[in-house]
Image (tube, rainbow, N blue to C red; front, side):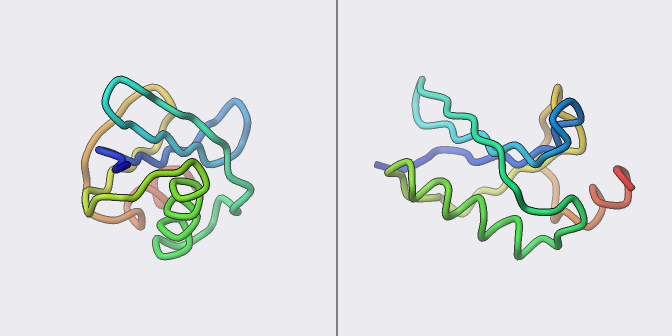
Length: 85
C-alpha cells in the first residue's frame, strides 16, 4: 500500500514531532521522539520509518509545517526550524 501524503508537524501541546500518514480516507497520526532541533534528513528518515512500520510505502511528496493545526507544502524543514526556535 502507498501513502498518498506524509506530513511532519511540530505538536506544541505534546512538544514532539507529529507524523500524519494519509492513505485514501485513512489517516494515521503518530508522535516521534526525534528532538525538536533535528535536521531535515533525520525527520524524513523518522517519517519514512513510521510509514513503513504502519505498512505503507512513501511517495516522493513531502509536507511539513510549523504548527499542529495547519498544513502546507513547502521545501525543506530548515525554514520551519527557524520558525519554532
